[in-house]
Amino acid sequence: MIQPFGEAALMLSVDVALATQRRLWATWHALCAREPQVEWVLGMGNLTGFFDPLAIATTQLERAIEAAWLDSNGAETEMGKRVEIPVVYGGEAGPDLAVVAEQAGLSCDEVIARHAAGEYVVYCLGFLPGFAYLGGLDPALACPRRASPRLSVPAGSVAIGGAQTAVYPLASPGGWQLIGRTDVKLFDPYRETPGLLSPGDTVVFVPRPA
Image 1 (spheres, one colour):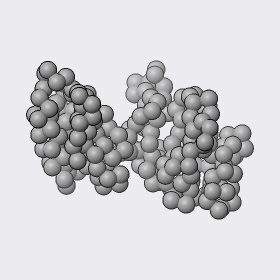
Image 2 (cartoon, helix red, strand yellow):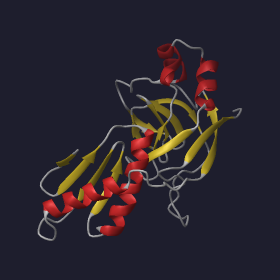
Image 3 (spheres, helix red, strand yellow):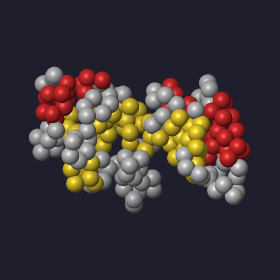
């Protein structure tokens, strides 16, 4: 579904599933090439185009989105890279591990085993530079966000928020449940490519001792 998002933006919304997200990636790449004057922002199950109404008509942009979405059906999506991220789970590194375990009705060791057994796909980036929203979390580990967000979450914190997992690339406020921490830098402004992860990449978490 395509709908206005304010007076100078259109949003394409689809189901949040890996198959439809892959189509969104293809649509996103196509529109960035076809309509470079528009700022395209990829989200979880949505793609938003921010434009100047004086430079491009809303109807023209809507037709472009429709065409790109239809063309994406059956399109081959380039496979991303595989990234292994070592994680220290629990303790000071993961102060909310017991909360997730209690919510799931599992032991802390079982939560760690299930979280580390998954292969996660980067659906999109947002919230912070290099912050990757990862799909593929074991449904048993889904856990509500904290009632009171922390004022400062350490960089590298591995967390669960709802049905998703992610790594905080920078120190920031945050309300996700913290289950571990990694030393891997997900965002470094001095690297040629600052963000470690991109949409379509596969992420695997590897437990390591503290």
